[in-house]
Amino acid sequence: MRPISRAAAVFGDPMNDPADSALATIPRVTTVRVVYLARLREALGCTSEGLAVATEAAPSVADVVAMLRGRGGAWSHELAAGRAVRVAVNQRLARAETPVGDGDEVAFFPPVTGG
Image (cartoon, rainbow, N blue to C red; front, top):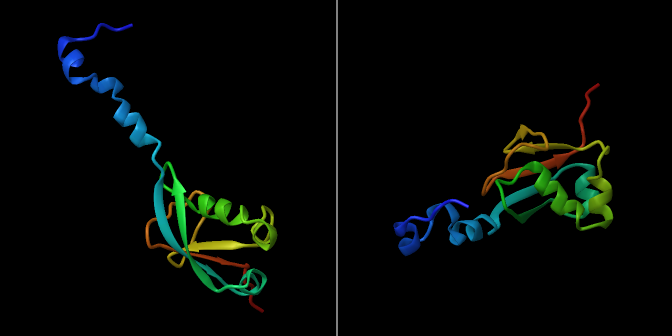
């Protein structure tokens, strides 16, 4: 156990401030606009929606996908691992670890091939 200084006894120990640990567990809420294209629009029955993503750390595409899969039904089926679905954040192709910010557009779409 480390010795406590007189200042820490009076003013609190900055290395062990309970307020800091309480703030660390408050979820951050980020609101994104989710867009569904092509077959996903038909399967899910909507073209777009606002989604509030609550996470303890900076949210990512994986957090958005997890929230949507958590709805069950067509959401978990269409966005299941291994399904042919691509994601773009603000019209740039994204990966699961891509961060999302407040007001970002997150689009889900099937891969497109030409011919």
